[in-house]
Length: 332
Image (cartoon, rainbow, N blue to C red):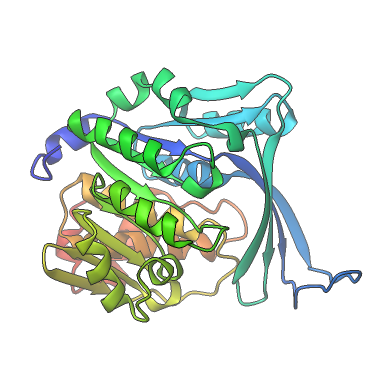
């Protein structure tokens, strides 16, 4: 789809495809335990998640019609995920329930400063594959933006498969968005080589800086974003958390500083940023305004204990106040 057709982007839903799981989040953990020992956090919660879930929740809170395709088990956690997504108004008809399967779970360990580490079992997401997505292709067909997220949490969905799916979406005039997440195999050379084909079919590539550094070897966001852009995506966005965010299109790089907030925890922050950026992108805003809206959406989310995903009106007002130098691009 041409980036010059915002009216078409607004007419259709966003389809988010990838991993679904539940997160057990344990907060205020002072240090990782060594084997045979134990440490305590101060509180915990169990939430529906996965990059697909977090992205969909945030998109719906911003008023964007959203469908998802993913896999859950026929268990209480899978039922919770579907019910939670439906409660936000997400179209869950593309969620595949595997009889006898176990839904994936991630234990998110959060430090006192909000930084986090993860331990996961993939459950039914490990068998989520290209054929399953093609069997639900009516959902991407209805959408204008095709989001493929959490790629390394769905190992049966290979890089070759991802490239084919993105190509099929682009041939159908969809905007394609990719956020792979972190590679637990630590970005082996064959993975980085295979990623190049995937990126050549990508409109928006949206890694965080740790991922961008691992892929490119570049030690700065400014260097990483140039190298990533040369691999083929039309637009690259790099999320740098408390250091702001970057975007590059053609030969121009944009930077927007962060909003300073108290961090409750940052689990799901990148996915929430993606939703904010996509909101602006669907409305054909300048790219720096899209970055500002992404920063704002994520910053509100990470500062809350409950009711974490912000509503559109709140993000709009906060973004206009926090970024007066680009508020003219935030046209709501």
